[in-house]
Length: 500
Image (cartoon, rainbow, N blue to C red):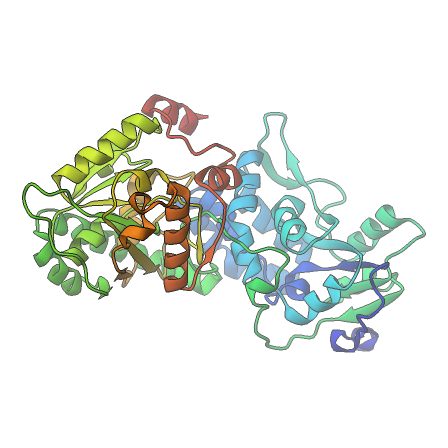
């Protein structure tokens, strides 16, 4: 008991004059509110592995927690590592760590520890977690200089064996040894931890403070060094054992519900489909006054909306109560086949795309999402200005969505499943707000440049939704989440990538 009382609580730590000092902090339970790393192992097992691997990991939880309490923390973590990583490609693990985990880590940062950690000039993380998992987040969003973590054993072919390199999982004395190897005689000025196995490394630091087990609200995400704008993965909530269990139990119900929601609405007229939405638990809220349907022989209205899911144009048609067309940067052949509205893929050839858009406007109303890709967070990507050159009948539409269990967008996954994942949620929610048609003086015919028109609409939509405008593009998103430029590959290439 005395050993536990050697360190004062972190609330007593002075943060002034620390800019030239070094801090070494544990992660789970210290810089993060949660003491368990299970959710992050689950995300790797599911996103880099498979549903079966994730289920095996979930079933192992009682056994692993028993090991943690009775045998040792090190053996328990080794078990999680083996189940989660054995046989996976290292590049897939790294991709999940970069594109999926930061969102969940960012929602769990301990406010008091962050205040202390952020006051230091040099920041180190010392953790029992695999270094490859935590490094992208703590470096990019917490400003850590280096991560001292457990190192995975990897084969020559680049696959994780499920075991770890010597000296093993960094707990207890292994953390102390890692600190000594890294710093030598010039040890950190401050050590932060939350459990007894952290005392070894904390005791050799010049100061040490403990993070007590008290309930607290996580740090607001906008207080981090940079916002999480792009992220990947299908799960909305952090998969604690209970949340993961409920998510998997809901999955078969969600699949049946999704199939009903997708296919019953394909054959229904848009006016009737809205009533079917209510019947099947899809919440659609429409605000504003949409423009009337164009008369025969007159060009249609160009609806410009932000992009939240692949279903944005379809739901817009239901909100309007009539058929419309849409153009998109990427749509699978299957999604195009089952789409209840006409969907045309853009070619990225400016003249050809402009001609297609003009032709579609002659047929009737058209929806375009000029961001070119979806964004899950409350940010708007840069708008392409091509649409502004083609018509002066422009109506902005602000779209917001709520998905409680599954995300209906993906970069690295199977895009043809996106509409099904949207409708697998218990109550997918759409809010469609029709804004006023742009006055003539704010269009290109009124003397504005295409870029001025696009930027104006972006600002108006952001103000309506309470979102933030950015200058980021589709290319930035795909570069961050998949290491590509976002161009659609041929079916043959996709198959080759899946086999790789």
